Length: 95
Image 1 (cartoon, rainbow, N blue to C red):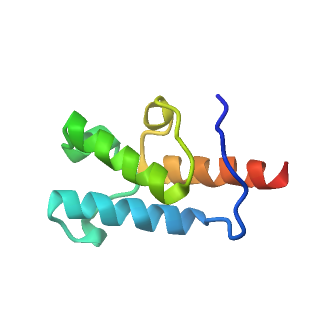
Image 2: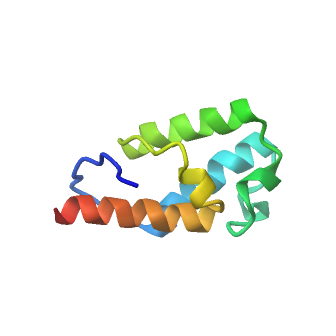
Image 3: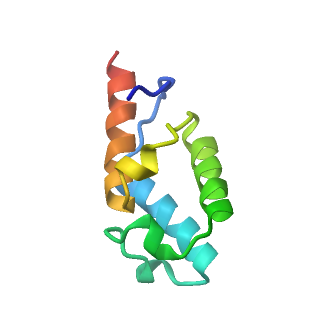
């Protein structure tokens, strides 16, 4: 899997990515952020396919790069996806 990532001046942290995802999911679920478990699988959040696509699009806009269509499949929790996103960004900034 390869990602097209542009270098950024200020790399994101895992915590920042998790916070963004938690906020978006909490909003869609009409829940408080502290109620969103970062280790829960995305498909357990009861988001329909349209909501998941919108979330992925918003995430790509926020990150400034396109995610592979399989990213949420291979990284199925907020914690996993956040760590993976940061590692992809770090590799892009190192290269």
